[in-house]
Picture 1 (cartoon, one colour):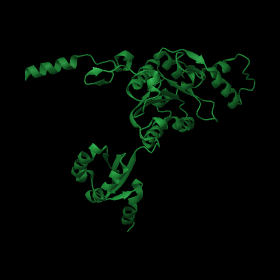
Picture 2 (picture 1 turned 135 degrees about the vertical axis):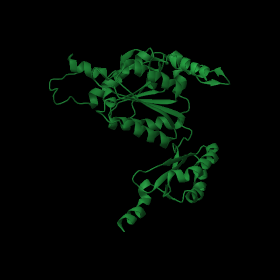
Picture 3 (picture 1 turned 30 degrees about the horizontal axis):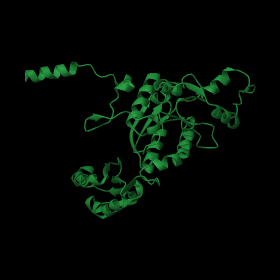
Picture 4 (picture 1 turned 120 degrees about the horizontal axis):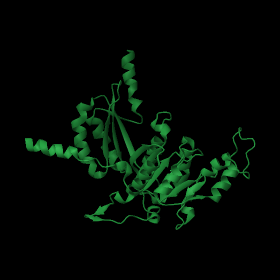
Length: 330
């Protein structure tokens, strides 16, 4: 017993790895049969099929509770509808090292990566410069982005004397937003995307698969919508039908249906279908879900699942609550 305690003490005394500052070279690369595969080029990343996705929310104001992040939730739904597997969401501060580490790691691990936040005109908007530094790229004033900014944006009412032709702190601040990371060895058009004619804001694409978006929710969602036509040809389902979800409402406790759902999960997993169970606190009914891409197969399971959980299929969780409300009122 003492020997086991001694081994445990040695294990606990080992220094923890410093994940926050892992270099790009230290990120494990994918392997096949134990053979390490070479890292993909930016060109490869920008053209290959998209199966997995990652999201990085950047901003001290999110970590401090001042701003409530809604962009990651929107992106999760976006990925679900397009059939991309969202594998990771991270929230990090306006910190150069953390932004660099997170983007390098996610670029290596996932097919499609978005960042949200940190591309405004102030001193703490450092996303562009941090990602440029992480990938060894210069920041270049992008002429087309500047031209669109001049045409589509208007000075704030407080900037009555602002001029695009006269040097000023305000002009310097605006130019920060159109100095973009550019890999001069690659075609610039694939690195700066204008996906909405009503917006001057570009989507800056770094290393082929990192898409830098603003943190303002309206702009974030609008730019993602504009990007969709460019993504569809690279999806497993070119029509972008994505993943299906079937929802059931059951009056049974989770513990009561756990055995049945465990058995069901084992049966459907080889078909790429996942089973979920979700309690609804304060309500008498709980929810069960099927999630997958084989709609026909999932539909065939509906009758047996309704029987197995003594429930009904619903479109929304609350759809079967009417009977519960009637019981309370009687």
